[in-house]
Structures are given as C-alpha cells and as structure tokens.
Amino acid sequence: MTSLTLIRRIAARPSIVFDALTTPDGIAAWWGPDAGPVLMAQTDVRVGGHCRVRFRMLDGTEHESDGEYLEVDPPHRLVMSFRWTEGGEPEENGAVSRIEIALRPIEINAGSNSGTGTELTFTHARLQNEVSRASHADGWSGSLDKLVRHFAQVVETDDEA
Image (cartoon, rainbow, N blue to C red; front, side, top):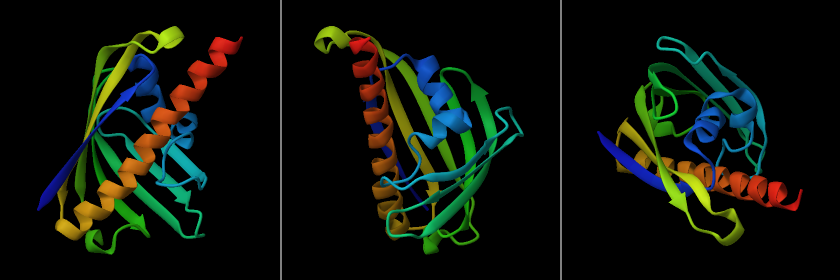
C-alpha cells in the first residue's frame, strides 16, 4: 500500500475552509479534478457519520465515492474512510482507503488580501499501488487547486464590494 500528501495555501480562515470540506454547498465548489459539476453531495459530519459525493467529469464519465467520518475536530482536522462506489480508479475497486486533512492557520500576505489563511495538508493513505497513487495525486491536485481558486475568487469578489 502507498499514500500521497498534497499541501495547499488557501486565502481563507481554517473555519471557512473546514465548512467547504464538510458541507454539500462547499463540496460542490471544489470536488472533482476538472470543471465538471458535482451532481450530489451528502454529509453527516460526526464520528460515525457518512459522506457521499457524485460528480461528472468534462468527458461525461460519472464517479461516486463514499466514506465514514473517523475524526472530526473543527476547524483543525478531518479523517475519513474513502471508497469508490462507481467509476474512480479501477485499482481501488472494492478497497477502502483513508483521507486525513489537517488545517493550520497561516498569515497570507497578498496585498489587499492579507490576513489569516490556511495551510491545508491532505493525505490519502492505504492506496493499493503506485498506479492508483499517481491517479489519485492527479485527481486530488485538480480538486484542491479548484478549492484554492474558489477562495481566491471569493476574496476578489469581497474586495470589490
């Protein structure tokens, strides 16, 4: 088994980023590796609660995953199981992996957008092999980049008001 870790700096406080990770509206803004839509997001954010997300990629394929929340420590940490229920990486068919997300406040110095931001550390562990790790690294990178862009747009919009 193998794992991947991705780190992103986000122009929003940890509590706001935590909401984007755990609410259906928040998830709809960033989940999925390309600009395709999130078709459904369900969350029950408590230890033992479940998360289910379905999205469509630009090539028309649909993918769905679900998981159980194992640790919930807002706005610092989120740990959950993860498995593909439709589509996804064939190497992971029937397998359950683990996602750990840590959020740490940081100072963002971006001109008028200065203030408290978030360093997000995303780890996807217990992946079956290197092929799966590489595929998930590409997918999660696309998703997390969308999350970063989402908050960059929110900040820009807020600044214009």
